[in-house]
Length: 410
Image (cartoon, rainbow, N blue to C red):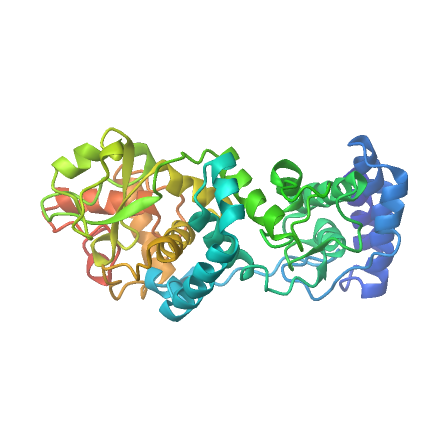
C-alpha cells in the first residue's frame, strides 16, 4: 500500500484546489493495478496470465455507492439528531413474505430430491436453504448484472473499505485461476456478492461446492450447486442438525425481559419452567429440553418474543442482523409448515431519534451497564441494560427505548 500512499501524496500536491478529474483518477487506477495490486496478488499465487486477462480492460465504475476518489473525503454521515431508526416491524413485509413463501413451497417440491440429498449430507433442512435462496436472490431470479472484477477493483481502489475489497478482489482472481469461472462470467451485485447465494469471493472459495457433478462450482446457473453451497456454508458455520432455529413464545410479566442474548443461554427446559411457552400452544420438542436456548426480544415488550437456538446465530453468520435471521426463520417455517406471520404484534416503536437513544446509551454506560456499541441503535445489550435499569428503578421493564424514558434516564 506504500505505492498508493505516495501516489495520493503526489496527487494532493498536483491538485491542491480540487479533487482529481475522472481521467486523472483512471490513470492512477492503472498505476495502482500494476504497482500495488499485481505484487499483492502474485504473492498469494495468482498467475500473471489470469491477472492480465482479468485486469487489463477493467475501468472504474463511477456509479457505485460509497466511493472516495483520490483527492476527496468520505461523505459525512447523516447527523445522529436527524435520523430515526426504523421499527423492526417494517422489515417483515407480509406481502413479500407471502410471495416468497408461495414460490418457496413450489420450488421446495420441485427440488425435493436434491434438497433431501443436501440435508442428508449437510444436516441443514431444505426449508432453511430455500428461504436463504429466496431472500438472497429471489430463488435465482434476481438480475446480477455487474462485473464482479470491475466492482471489486473500483471499491478496492477508492471506497470506504479498501482493504476488505482488495482481499475480495484477489479472491475473485483465484476463482478465475481455479477455472470455475472466467473473469467475464464472474457476475455479482453492486457490492461484489456472487451468484444465487450472494457469496463474497472469499466465501465462494471456502464454501461453494460442485453438487451436480459437472466439475465446476457454478452458483450462477446451477440450482444444485447453489443450494448445496448455502447448506455447506451454514454447516461449516456450526448448524446443529435436528434442531430448529427457534420458537415464538410468550414471556410472562413476572419474567424479566432483561435476560436476552447469546451469552445468557439456558436449557430450554429452564425457560419453560419459568413459564415461557410457545405461542402455538405446543410443548417444546422433547429433544430440546436439555439443549441450550436464548431469549430474544427484538422490540422488547413491544413485539414478538422468542426463544432461539444456536442455529439462529448461524443464520446471522450469513447476514449479521437479528431481523435477517428472524426473516429467514419465519420464511422457512412458512415453506415447511404453511405457517404465517409472527403472532406477536410489532408495536409503534422506532420513532425516536438516534441521538435520543445515543444519550440513553451514554447514561447507561455511566451507570456501569454494558450496552454494546454506543451508536444510537438498540441492540440486545442496550435492550437488556435498559430493562435491568428499569427494574431497579421501580419501572415496568419494557427493554426498549421510548420517549417517556428520556427524562428519567439521565
